[in-house]
Image (tube, rainbow, N blue to C red; front, side, top):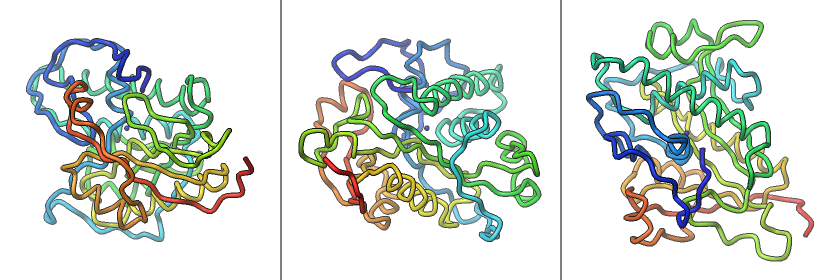
Length: 280
């Protein structure tokens, strides 16, 4: 962690405890929320890196076994959708019907992700899901839940999606402030945005976030992107630190009124430049 309405045409949805899971801001949900409108995927789409967990909950990994690649198969995209729900939502697992609700959320993100990657979402020129994966054998001893819910087969072995993000080549992300670079006629599609940046909580502090962003930059350069953006909540210090270390700088801030209207923490828009051969 999709996004169909700009702020002035924001669809309505039920006022449930889970109505504003956005920008890595957790809302506690003790009972399964009612069925949402299609805007549930737009909430997940704009998620950003969750806060890091305590040191006691983290595990070290063998980075030589890590694979960073663009997710193509439906099995891998499903695993990525499951990881996003696992990272961005916080439920009491003993709540009635909670597993069915998690599956519902994953299915909605999965369908939206397939649309974006297939290039049929209006307003997007190109979208790729970039995943960090490890062999199942390396993750089983760390977390049964992660291994069971985020695994897929690549045809040769079973692997687990332990980190994921989207890179979106578009003028702007709906419900978000737009980047201003590059300038000039026809330059808009030399701009891209990162979204749905997340790493399994058990495996944070292994540099996976930085690895995913580095891979995203390479993909963006291949697309001819010159200006890469990411939105982050003003109070999400771990995410801001990650992006700054990855070369992003502040370009703009979301107006307070817009954040209030969208019922979420105010966002910062961060920018970094990339080498590009894009010819205006």
